[in-house]
Image (cartoon, rainbow, N blue to C red; front, top):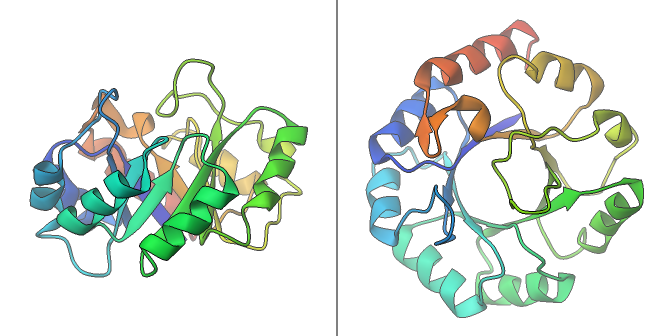
Length: 211
């Protein structure tokens, strides 16, 4: 199972988190976010990482030119679209970056809204389900309705996000079987400053349930 720790702002923490067991390191490429990092910061953070680690850039309603520029310059291996990007945009991005993983994040409001995920299964590599918040796009600390997701079986791999932390990961994974999990605020001291003790605790919890 993939484990993505997102919202890294301190380059030295990226290698430490990967060493603890993370398969994916996420960087916020949204200037309004308190976890925003520049291309140079991403370059410094990804340079020491093993090649097997996925380096994901998170974008919100960015244009194709900007995404391509950031990905090409910084060495990212994946793009997470966390805004209102339609399936057509995902198809266009695939043409622009054919070798880069495309992850579409959806902030799920209800069961009806969950059905919109199926519009993306033919145009992205991976889905990510996050909790809906009217003002914030991510890192809210709010959990999804896990009960609502129990019958969710898309044809693409998917990440569970939204309020996950070491204290609730066992419960979440006892109810759901995602292909990956995504944590940000649940393992932080403050936005962008990860708590490495909490990250280590997360992997202890995962090991205890044989993930």
